[in-house]
Length: 107
Image (cartoon, rainbow, N blue to C red; front, side, top):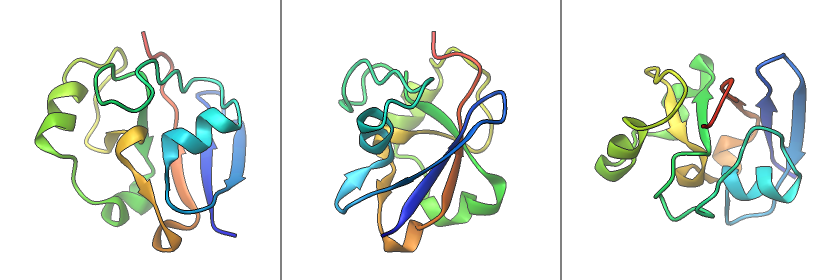
């Protein structure tokens, strides 16, 4: 089973298996990952599922859409070059082992 790894701002690592198709946000919510609020449930309208894709994985997830980029301009934590909304990261076998860092705050 493929997995995605969430790392908290304090270094706690959670490796979570997933079935396809799903988004990284759905996996985080179903496992109660602290720091992924996802208030809009994946409708790309709140920015509270902001993550930093690990630099070693940045090339694997593809670029953010224009709508996602607009929402990333509004996130509470610092926006970095690897910032993404995890509701927009569709997981696949090719993304097995993807590492996502959770920012200090979503609000």
